[in-house]
Length: 185
Image 1 (cartoon, helix red, strand yellow):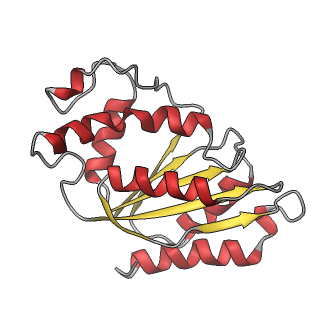
Image 2 (cartoon, rainbow, N blue to C red):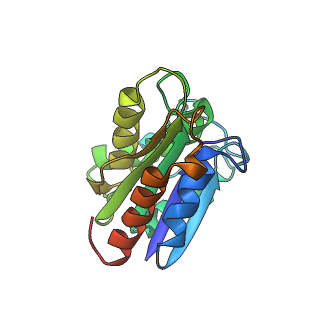
């Protein structure tokens, strides 16, 4: 089983990473993590070269990410919530999913080359709502061919209880990993 995790956090030991750790500790198979803040991936420049072929004109790390998406059984979007949204850097990286969109328009499989499951891990403090981040994550997971998307795992109010100490959120992340490892959603 191959799981691809997009980490939208700039912090290497932050709340999002705590949730990712709980998930991967209970997950069988291979897990690849794309650290959006450290990845050398440019945002989409809307050149539209992907309208004609399933590739991108920008030659950077996204080529490897496309390969990982196509090989994945599970894809996870893990992000802090900034002003009720996924991080900007996460959205920059995932703006490069356009080749899949245009492939589907041409009647090709694109990223929907097989069934895969999707998951959402969110961490955030403050008084905003996670609703917009959840909506955006679901849209992006569907764009990557996820036909089953699990209920979001969230650690909110991290300014009071950091995710690393949020027993309920850590248990939910671990349960997701166990369910996927057992072949369940």
